[in-house]
Image (tube, rainbow, N blue to C red):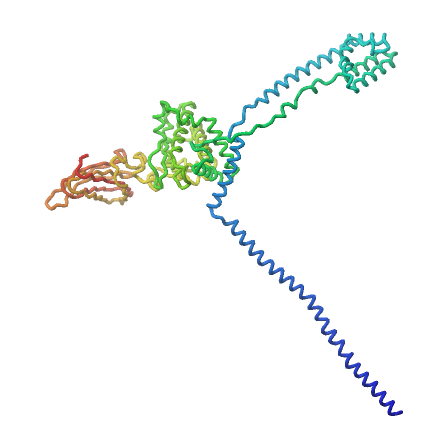
Length: 570
């Protein structure tokens, strides 16, 4: 028994120990394993989502930056081409709708005025009829007749019967019949007081009379069926719109003038077409010049080209001092018409075949002896003329040179220049005083292309291009022109600012030959002929030596060129 009890106790201990071994360590791994696993399962999706969002956001940003670069940085050619295509579509729509044609004169307004007058006359007639009905004598007659007869429907007065006749004849209008019945009841019930019956009758008369204005036919004018409109044909500067590449060149001028704002450019184009029609520019071009044309040509004329090939137009504002020409507004308007005619002829002579062609001008405005600011009317006319050319000949000025500008004009321009001209026009303007005028012109125009009165050469002999040289103060400068045997050498020379000494001689290359004086040394002043010309027929080879002696304290610019003609005389 003791052994059995001992074995039982041992089994219990063994079972307990096994339970402890199994059960005790079991919860420890569950707590240690399950807790971190659960936390890991919760933390992992947060990392994964943040990483996924980061991965998704990175390529999206890259795509956005790429697209932004393509939109923000297009080439100027692409922008210009896109704007031109949009502009052409708007012009095509405007031509299809005939928006370039001025609207017809307002005929409907005249009709409405006539209708208003007719309505006024009808209103006056109505008021007169009402006044006649309100007269006391007629009211008394109505009272007597209404008091004698109980039934006013059978024995109505003549005036009332006339007014109520439409109500009896139009049986279809039930409201009018009911109105008359009610008024008769009121009249029969009021036998004691005759005045009440009159008031009732008057009320019935006013209510029964139909309005005359309701019968006026108004709907007929609004029901108008529009017929199909043919596209309009419009030409500007002698070029039909949207016909070929020449039209594109012209449309680009309007786009540039409005900074490639398509709708504003279209408005400008419409205004220009309208201005041309109102002033009959196409007819003005073909018109013959008047008697004043010879005088006007002294003021404005085209001469030569600049270094890039643009035609140059010169304007002399000093000629505005001529009182015989510009004494009144009529003569000023004649000059303006002549000036527009000259501009139109010069524009039509340009090449619009491509945007790279020279389809603009260089304007040179000479302010020597220009009228002062005191002549306000004259300057207002000049501003008006400049405004017309800016609005109707846009982007036809590649550069504007103002030469011989007086001292008072420069501060005036700085103060009021923003009001007179547009910023785009001001960017093309160059101002130069009298001492810098020639240098400013020669910066853009070759001396052989400049008229003599503006510092250029006469271009009588032609020949090679002009050579420029500088004569230092208190120094001499020599020019050597080679001459072959049996040839005639001719040259022309100009010293800007003059006040120098000039001389020329022929020096042969053969030994034992003598020098030949071609021109003795002489003083060249400001009043002398600005261009010096000379020629010499050489019987033997040698050279012409020209000497310029500058004894002043200022440097001088010399322009010269020469030409050799073998075996010929001048």
